[in-house]
Length: 165
Image (cartoon, rainbow, N blue to C red; front, side, top):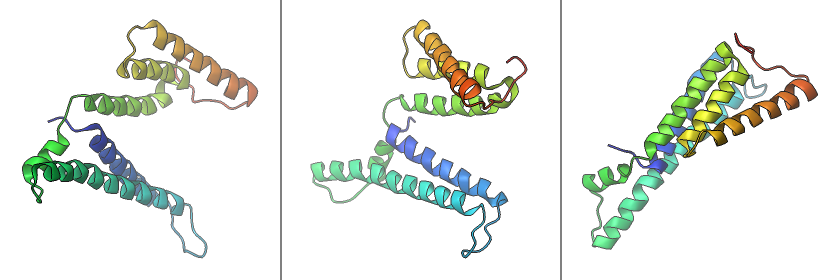
């Protein structure tokens, strides 16, 4: 079963907000009079999970309600709910992109920023529909050079170094 893009994005927002809430448990909350470092991630996670859940409900109910109104029925059936969650296969691109992004975040610490960023930009460009390899490679090299001069040379900040660069 393929999930609609909007619904997949809503579920991703809820999971991302829940991840914030789970990760936030390691920070102290302290009191409301003098809040600790855990308050801001708690608010961000709760708002993100809440808005994602709200948008999920809206994205599932809106097409079902309009379908029911067109057919003259006043109730929502299980079949119409199942139809809300199904559509084309483009959602796999979204899930693949999330997976590539997670791998990118994990690879930054082992192979370094520049190599992992180079590979990430190429992969993301191909997932988003780049037809050839020259454009993504040129884009990736340009982003790498821009980041190097902006952060390493001008701002004197360093990126995570890997075993190659």
